[in-house]
Length: 136
Image (tube, rainbow, N blue to C red):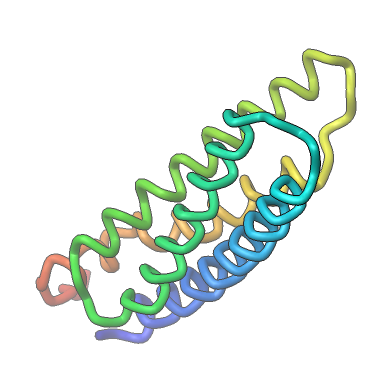
């Protein structure tokens, strides 16, 4: 693998580990807090459970990314796309209600873009597809 895809994957993996770590810790902590409270909101618990599972899947993808498995790249792109859509929905909701966007809404968009950008580069796509990079 040339230096460019290796560097791109390194930065993508760092972003994936940061995102998944934050997602797992936050998801588990909130699920524990909800479990010990009197709040009975099944939809919120389901949403937190799904987001925690996605964070675990992203962590697994970050671990497997260097193995050059095409499904890992595709799964990562899908998870990051869901993250961006959910964050954009939160950003839209905060703007509609008149509030200012919080870092908790903006950070997932920034981190997801830092992961998606390298994974969508042609040389990285070719590397996962098993093609050798050709010199221009």
